[in-house]
Structures are given as structure tokens and as C-alpha cells.
Amino acid sequence: MSSPSPWDINRERMVEEQLIPRGIHDPKTLQAMRTVPRHLFVDDAMAALAYGDHPLPISSGQTISQPYIVALMTQALQLKGGERVLEIGTGSGYQAAVLSRICERVFTIERIDALLVRARKIFDRLRYHNIVSRLDDGTIGWPDEAPFDGILVTAGGPKIPQPLVDQLADPGRMIIPVGDQYLQNLQLLEKNQGEITTKTIETVRFVNLIGVHGWTT
Image 1 (spheres, helix red, strand yellow):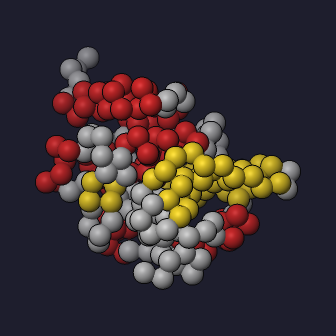
Image 2: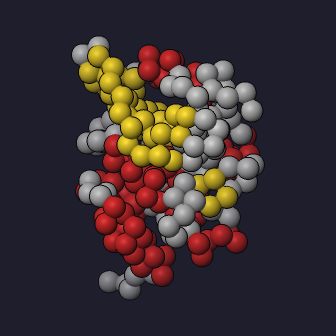
């Protein structure tokens, strides 16, 4: 058996020092975080910082979220392994990649072409073939593929877009940052037997959710 690479060691340290002590306990989430090579989803110049306890800038004024936030949002969906999940905001592609190691299929929407092209190349390189992507306004969702067992939004909006609520399966769970353009509450929305409930998980700061049902800029 070959020795673990420095990247493997850094990933394991990330899980043991950043995630588990903060309450990330779901085995599937932890395994996905141990598996996905986060350093491939950032610019080469940032690779040495990829497993640090912080977000990092990517191109087009966007960011790759802090590992803990990625794990927290993933765990909140309570995925068992056979789900179809919609992600709004592909960005670097890292969150979609983590989801893809757990659920059956990930549908991810990005509004910035350059980001989507780069993410798609990484998915192909890693042979993560259960990720389907499209260039579009994420706030209107992906009605042709609905309903989704889970929906995860990686940008902060002023409200929960109604099309996403409509496209969530029953039962289903959505995780989305909601607030102003500087600070949001990470909301968990649950749909069960026609009833909708929401609760706040944590205070976060995400880039703006741009679209018809989000911010204009």
C-alpha cells in the first residue's frame, strides 16, 4: 500500500481538526470531505491554502466556501445515498463534488459561464459523472428535473425563492442563506406532508444570489 500523499494528510487533518470538533458527525459527509480533492477546485496559486479553515477567492468575484460550511450544509440535507439534489451556484464545483459522493445525482446551476466550464472540466477529470450542470438563473431552479429530494443554495438571497420551494420533493430539505447582502442566516427549510417549516442553523456570509428571485446585482 502506498503512503498517503501530503494532500491526503491535509484532508484528514481538515476533517479531524475543523469538522468533527464542530459537530460534523454524519459518516457520509465526513467520508465525502475526506475523499474530494479540494485543492483541485482552487487556483494553483491557492492550492497550498485549500485545506485551511477559511473561504478562498476564485475567479469572477466568487468564493469557495470554508470546509466547515460545506460540510455543515451537506450534513443538514441528511442524505442517505439515493437522492437527487439540486445545487444553486456551482462556483468552483467543490460543493457539488462533495454532494456527488453521497447522493445518486447532482443537478447544479451556475450563471457565470467561465466558472461552469472550469468546474465541468474538474468533474470530468475526477470522473464524477453523476453531476449534471447547466448555465442559467438558479433562482428559477430546474423545473424539468423536479422534484428534488434536497436543494442546496450556495449564495445569499433576500428571501427563499418560491420556485425552489415548489421544486422540493415532499418530504424534502433545502438549505439556503437568507438575509441582506452582507450577512445571512443559514436556513433549513423542510417540507413534510404539505407543511413547510424553517429554522436557522448558523450566521454566515455568502456572495449574492443573483436572479429573478434574488438580488439584481
